[in-house]
Length: 244
Figure 1 (cartoon, one colour):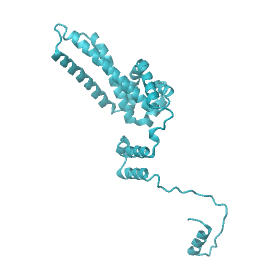
Figure 2 (cartoon, rainbow, N blue to C red):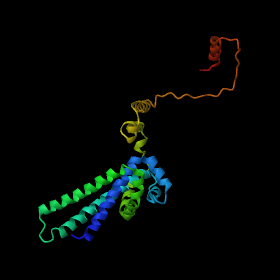
Figure 3 (cartoon, rainbow, N blue to C red):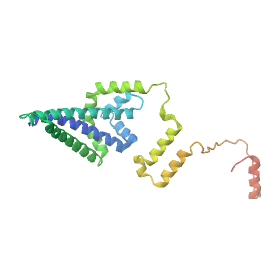
Figure 4 (cartoon, rainbow, N blue to C red):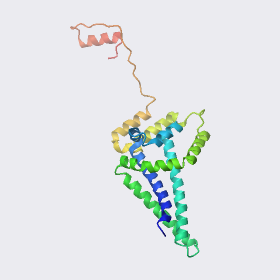
């Protein structure tokens, strides 16, 4: 097996692993911090700006959809090209039988898992740095497969997200579930102490029963004598309609 025959599968697996690293970096940084990184170098992260212009509604989720779709396409191309490469170069002298195909599939899966594990493991040390490192390669593949992924995303939005329907996320129960998920199940929960989580949960559960005080400005003024007692002053406040 020569090196040239492995270049194409290697390129595909590197692209898929780079998308895995970028996706993991975005998840670690979170939406707010990731968008700050995008704003620092808008020309460097131009793909996100392009997605915002083409898919204005929820560009963040659309970015993850396109990353996932592109990664699956790259893995499919990697598996196909590597399988053909193994069958033509390793088993070229003998007719490949079922055990040979199983061995080839096992090798393909092992290499893919090794790349995926390594890229996921490394990104945790410095997500911002690796986000910038893998962005050029991921941007290349996102644009390369955009004639496939962009129309499919548009079609999905047209079929399953009609503009006339009310979004599911606007229901009160949905908002409450999102707040509780943020407090207990998200990465933010790791940085909250139990008291903070209980406070957020209590506010989410009682949000419709919390009394909101309205301060009404007063234009009438009265005075108190310096010789009046506290009890007399309190009675005067009550008679004038002051709550405190």
